[in-house]
Length: 146
Image (cartoon, rainbow, N blue to C red; front, side):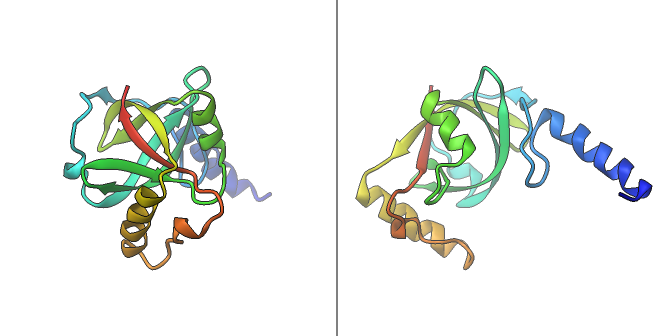
């Protein structure tokens, strides 16, 4: 490995200590805790957030989100990701949006109609998003107050 890459690798490791960096997961998120809103419409229809799972050993990732009818959704698609496995074991999560932390609970969505409504919104936001309703099993979550 060229020595000129060592500072870059060191910076990435340091950045990842308090949260995710790019596609690399991180640890505990930092920020000011805010009250959980009853309607998430202020966050826009979609965007990117940081999600912390596994409270006993924090694990955080960058994720795309969708707001539908004021509800906040995150989608792992057809794969039970590491963060989805954490939420299965302990649904308590923390979300960081615009520097504020929200303490929430992840509820897995299994209702077919709700998945279809989400899929329509999700796929209309970008041509690169796969329709979750095509998967045999969908790992879709609604984030709600604890």
